Length: 267
Image (cartoon, rainbow, N blue to C red; front, side, top):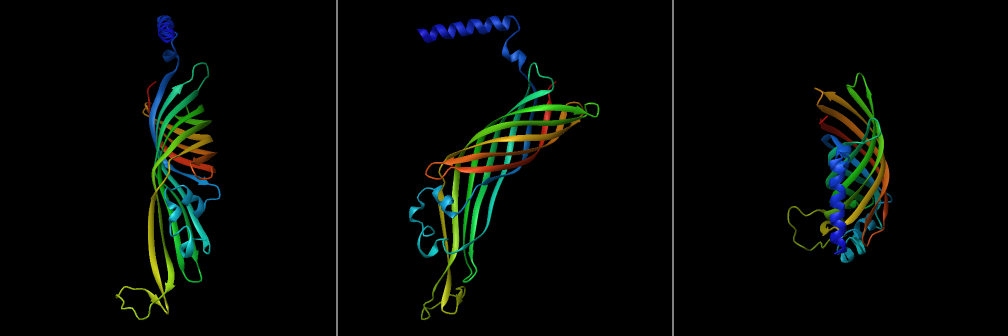
């Protein structure tokens, strides 16, 4: 009963405000809608094979986790963090603040790549750890707009934050090991044998655990007005954040993001 009464009162108050033309929807107006496509680097701090193994399910018995095929005796020679993304945005005109916008976005990151690669120069063996995952995120960004060149160009500066769910990923591990060759064994034409050793290739794949990513960032951008109804722009974001995955260390991330945007101006 109490909940019902509160609901009715809220309905009556909202109706009264709308009747006086003071309702929130009449104050916060969607000024632009648009799409941004680009790429970003969401660099994990101190990423290595142990961390990547800890983000996946069932890697405890991986041949690449212990024994002759582990990366402990190999040299780390490279890593990668690449995130292609798409951003759907509604830009709201902020009441009471001149040339201010609140951009609310839904972000999709598909096939994000985090990789760590190891190589043994002595016996020319390697192990490659590559994680591919997806992220769905929500973002809020405040921008101040500076029109120039007779309102034909907009300059933007601001700050924002986003938070997303990492899901639907997989960890692929492949590598070669050098093993003692059986010189008495009959061999196929494509066997690779070097002296008394042969190189054996191995591959494993695991499902990644779900996790959370969050970032805070500064933003700068530029937009060119076309035909008074469209805005073609470029955006750059730089910030810091974290990635938290159950069973793995929470890692600091450093964000560098760039993209091209296309927006439709409603008013």
